[in-house]
Length: 259
Image (cartoon, rainbow, N blue to C red):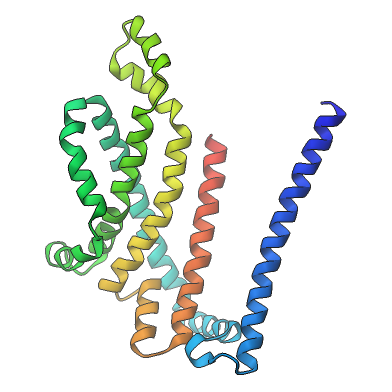
């Protein structure tokens, strides 16, 4: 490695560290400003809560053995939804790519389903599937699966045509082209889709918990709003933010190892 390359890599590391330090500093600054404004009664802490009140609420939830139970419930529902969405969307995308006639038939339905507000289906899901974990997971899958299918399928059909033609000249079957060119060429697309999926599934689970749940972070937020406990609402939102960040970076770590 040349001196220029070493200097460049060193600059890149310094730049990345600077970004991270700035991000953390900005977060701490905003938290401090929030607490100061609350202490000075510039903002109404009864409505907006405060970092100190959120910490107190977290401690209370922990002492009452509710904190990790609610986190576990939401996490379990999210991971189940994410796994099912990933498997189903991959299978459907492969089928749509393999069968052109099928893709032409299904395409308008995907567009219609993608534009439909899934919350409107909530009452139907409750009636058909029940007010239970199955209904919550179904809601999460409905919210995330259409976007997932469209992203992966669009990546498949935009694969380098020259590579495909090269294999076709050697009389390779469509199945071999799919396995040896299309899917390997779309690893980045699939990984990026997974990153979107994990957040979409979490959103879907929270929406499902708003509709029908007796546990989970969504339940905490809904219950807090019903009894006008804004500290509980803000604590639920804070837990949700932390959980979403952890899931996102765990997925990045996992895909880096596999990529």
